[in-house]
Image (tube, rainbow over all chains, first blue to last red; front, side, top):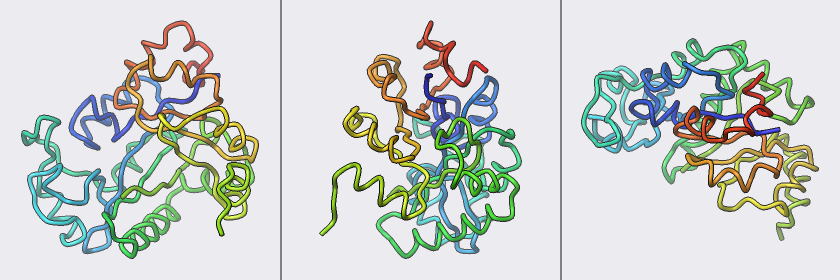
Amino acid sequence: MLPALHAHRLGRAYGPDSSAAALARALELPLGGLETDCCLTADGELVLLHDPLLEAGTTLSGWAHEHTAAEIRAGRLRRADGTPSEERPMILDELLQLAPPGVTLQLEVKAHADPALARRTALALCERLSYHPRASGSSSSASGPRRASSSPGVALGRGW
Amino acid sequence: MADYRVDALAAWAQRAGLHGVCVEHFLLSRALVAPLLAGGLSVTTGTINHAALLEPLLDLGLDAVTSDCPHELWAELGSRRDTSPLAA
């Protein structure tokens, strides 16, 4: 059996990294999962950005954890060539609403070289997911089938 | 001292309550993946955008592959795709 295919950064080839536009195009055809990155904001939200250093992927500057979600949402995502797009950074709740049932979410914690921030981000992520029905797929897989493709849910990871 | 044998790591991951691991594709081998799978872990890999990179890994039993362009990769896989869970 071939492995399931997950869209990296919600489909990086289809739009700005982790954007709603990329996600929409990625979901035009069947997909096994969606991969993206989570950064904690100053007000405890989770924004979907590959790089917590905002100038790396957005029209903003500074670190994600130094800004509120509203401030980050006011910026725009940059395209692969660096030009600003019309796309705003997404928050995790948007993804949870848009992701179809049965599609695995692969969520990476991003907290550049800051273990304490990584821990806070992971805890915020777990807390947020605990309120979402999708999380039941993840927790039930603790003693269930190991194959990600047969146990849709949430997979958490860490990236620096 | 930590034990870095793959089967020991798989056992540690199980005790720690982990469900799986994600390993960069250029680090994958049967010697690494087989003990992880045997240890009950899900094994996924990082970004692969070309079928030529994925083909040598297809028989390792990976659970998922991440790609910037999953649909193009899917098309490139050609005849082997009818055995993918995506074909269901």
